[in-house]
Image (cartoon, rainbow, N blue to C red; front, side, top):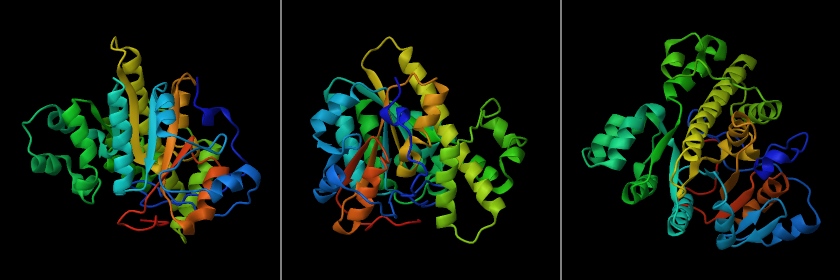
Amino acid sequence: MVGRAMMRRLPQPVVPAVLVCAFLSSFACAGTEQAASSGPVMEAANSFRSGQIIDTTNEQSISIEELMRRLLQQEVVYLGEEHHNRFHIETALSLLNSLSRAGRRPVMAMEMFGWESQPLLDRYVQGDDLTRQDFLNQAGWAQNWGGPFETYEPLVIFTKTEHLRLVALNPPKTLVRLVAKKGLAQARLEEDWTRSSMQEETIVDDPSYRQKILEQLRACHDGGSDDMYQKMYEASMVRDEGMAKTIVSLVNALRGSADPVVGPVVSYTGGGHVQYNLPVPQRVARRLSGTIRQTSIYMTTYDEKRREELREMLTSRIADYIWLTPLSEGGMPRRCR
């Protein structure tokens, strides 16, 4: 069974609601266009409030208890964040704790770590032979992600304390940069492509995804050449396809497990990787021939000034659920970071 967003037809043309924020790290999480609305949508928008969880299928608020009941039926739960927003980390922790209290053992997959750091992640989470600083230095945190590790550390600590699996979701940054610099065709001929075990991978150029990403790239990187945008777009495809590859391997492992309490996979990425379920969820569904139970939650800051943005996110169904959080110390979401 495919997630609801996989089964419905996307509005054509797709209205650009999210703009890229740090191309080689992730995408932005804030809408910028306004959309007309009426009836139930307008009523939902007028009642926006921090802490609200909105089911975009019927534009109704639901309780966290109801959300958890639904999440327990999923194989993959996608959480899309605004980077370095502590309220989004807290939201993720609340869901992880709820899954644990329900007797489940979720598998955490984080964009903030590249595939090459998986052995270090395993050592750090499963044992005590690495100090915190040694882990950060050897994993290349400052080079591969950047910003204070303290922001994301609670998620790492949770997996460590609960003895859960923590998986590096991101393809190597060097690989993504290679594609952005030389293009996909040339990158396939390079050693980095083979070293990353991508030689057998199909990189699907989906028309709806292409339209959305190129709109965002042009909006956020104005004045570039068509060749530059094409290469950046191809790098986006590789990142999202790589993340989908990782998630599919985890789903297959869970399906083959004799332990019924293991799972779901909780994917934690920037909101741009779950938007409209195009970047990663749709690629996961394709790789599994649509036989996947998955759902997406788009976490975003609530502020009165964003009412029109939030209304547009709702009407265009940016994810299966929208979770409104307080404003973080970093301020309002920015178009590009």
